[in-house]
Amino acid sequence: MKKIRQTLSSLATNWSMTQKSYPRLPLEVGGLALLVFLVALLPIGFFINWITAVLVAVPAALLVATIWFSRRAMKAAYKQIDGEPGAAAAVLQSQRGNNWAVTPGVAVSRNQDLISRAVGKPGVVLISEGPSNRVVPMLANERKKTARWVPDVPIYEIQVGNEAGQVPLARLQKEINKLPRNLRGGEITEVRRRLDAIGNAASAMPIPKGPMPTSARQVRRPR
Image 1 (cartoon, rainbow, N blue to C red):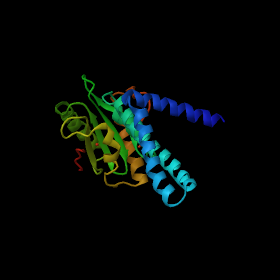
Image 2 (image 1 turned 135 degrees about the vertical axis):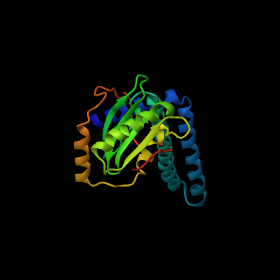
Image 3 (image 1 turned 45 degrees about the vertical axis):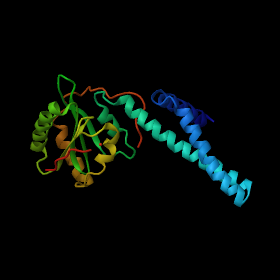
Image 4 (image 1 turned 30 degrees about the vertical axis):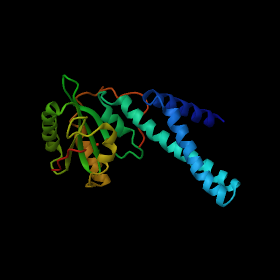
């Protein structure tokens, strides 16, 4: 019973948060559910029987409505944190089955442009947040510093943002998962150990609060 209450409470919170970004959410979900219900109900009812039609139409309508709501909720969550310092790191840290060691704010500018570092099977990924003209020099400096510690490890760069050539925050997970797998478990551990010695330019860097997305065009330059 406690789990049911927690689930309903979480659902209500997500619904409220999503509706702030999509005021017509009830009409979208309800209308889509009704449409799917009728599309499934009428043909089956006429050609087979109405009991079977209802048994098929109700689950189909609920499934489609749930999928639609989930997608809206994920987009709303991205909108909520988009533009906040550390948003890219927060997205990576919230990935399901997360295999990335993420260090937020390894480099931070006066304008709150920042670079986060992720270590995983592809190697090292430097992820910037900020205008392209300001983060390009930061990425170059961080790349040189990183390469001194792990000279034989592939290093990739991703600029997160909404400018031309940057990766929108909502596509970051998808794009980073496209990177090739270059390292094994023991090698990843060794890379992490070496890079930990560099330190963190902003060890107290805040991570955006609130719901995180649970499901980016990429600028990458493998060494």
